[in-house]
Structures are given as C-alpha cells and as structure tokens.
Image (tube, rainbow, N blue to C red; front, side, top):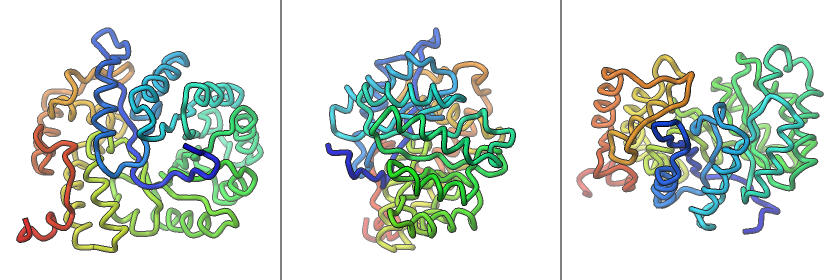
Length: 329
C-alpha cells in the first residue's frame, strides 16, 4: 500500500489491549480482538497504542510489540495507525521511527503532557515537537486535538500553522469537545491549500459531530461497536437522516455505558463489555485503573441489552435502512 498520499478517513476503531492475570500482554486475546475488528465490513484502519490500549501504562518495548503483533495479525488487510504518546519530543521521534520500522502505516500524535502548564502560549513548542517526529519518519500523521480547557489542545492559529508547515499532517483526531470550535476546525482545515481531514472522536455526541462535515471517526468505542459506527457513518454520508437517527438511538445506550463519571474508566468499561459479550475472557487493567464494581458491570450489561448488542449480534453488522424502516425487515 502506497502511503505517499494516504489521508486517514472513514471508520477507524482504536483497539483495546488485553492483559492476563499477571498484567502481561495477552497476545492470544489481542490477536482475537484485532481479528474481530478486522472482520467488520466498512472499517478503514485500526489504531493501536492509543488511550484504549492503556498506552500510558505501556513500556516502549510493549508499544513495539503492540504494533508488531497488529501488523502480523492484520497481514495487510488494513492499515495500522500507531499512537505516539510521550511527554518528551526526542522520545516522540524515537517512537515514530520505531513504529515505522515495526510496520505502522500512519501515526497518531498525542500532544506532549509536558505542555499542559502553559504550552498553548508557546506555539514554538508544538512546532518543535512535530519537527522531532518528521525528522525521524516519513509516515503520515494524525494530530490528536484535545479540549482547550485541558491545556493540551492546540489553539486554532497554532493548529493551522502546524498543518501548513508539515505536509505529513493528513488529519486531526478532533476531541475539542466544543461544537462551535469543532465546526470551525472542519471548515478551516478543509479550506487549506492542502486540505486536512477531520476525524471525530466526539463519541458521546457522534451523530451531531459527523453531520457537520467530518471525514470519518477514530474512536475507542469502535473496539465494541464498530459495526454501529460504520452504519452511522454510511447513513450520514448518504444524507439519510432517518437511518442515521435509528442507528444513533442504539449508540445512545452505549454512550451511557462507556462515558459516565468518572470519564477515565471508559476503556475499562469497554473491556468489561467484551467480557459480557463473550469476546474477552477477562477485563484486567493496569494500575492506577481498577476493576469495576459488580453494580457498574451490571449497569453496562443493561445498557448493552438496550442497544441490542448481545453475544450473537456483536460485530455482526447493521443495515441502517432496515433499522430505520423495520417493515422492510
């Protein structure tokens, strides 16, 4: 696959990373999870080493293994997008080089946590961070745009400057969490001389986000509901609002399951979902994350049932027209 003009688009799940009881990577379960995702017709790539994979708790060696195993398991069926998550720019370049050598097709660049305390007023820091990456790799990049309130989001002027300076930036993963700013991102990045794609990760209000003109989505929820996301994306692309609303009515219940308070447990909840659905044997997470309570797991189970997601239907695909017009079923 040529990467010269690769522009990430469509539905891109961010996969989970299963661990065994000793909290080592469970390679058998990981391969099975990747295979489940790859079986869903309509997804365009898979992201590894992201928030969903608990990248904050992975060693550099484990990050390399996460990419290697994914590339081997997918065997060219789908591009592998690898996260670049670190507080230091020199190490970011090293991770980028390692990811390219391990077979990644694209990089998802997280903002360095070291810039949270005022980096928004030092745009030259963002420029240098990306420079350290592009000096080490030829791979296309997706910038992860955080909420401005986090201190890690790029102000719009900085974001536009980065996209103009670095042709390797082909898309952003937009989590600005501000509908008005999100729309402005879409309009202004699409208007650049070399347009940059917008991948929504506003998973708690995905329909509202996509209809603004996104080029796709990149979401950890895709580890559980990639088929629903594909159905929603295709309905929006077809401008079929009735079908999109019908799919969104099902996704709504998964939002309640995944994105409650505290927000940090979202991927913990996704792992528990796959245990309930018979796709993972266990839902081990690394500290400081902690196993959910029995009551929380029961709540997730109830939400999945409301969404019509069962061991028999998970990953099986959705016909949005039939969902919206049951008389056709």
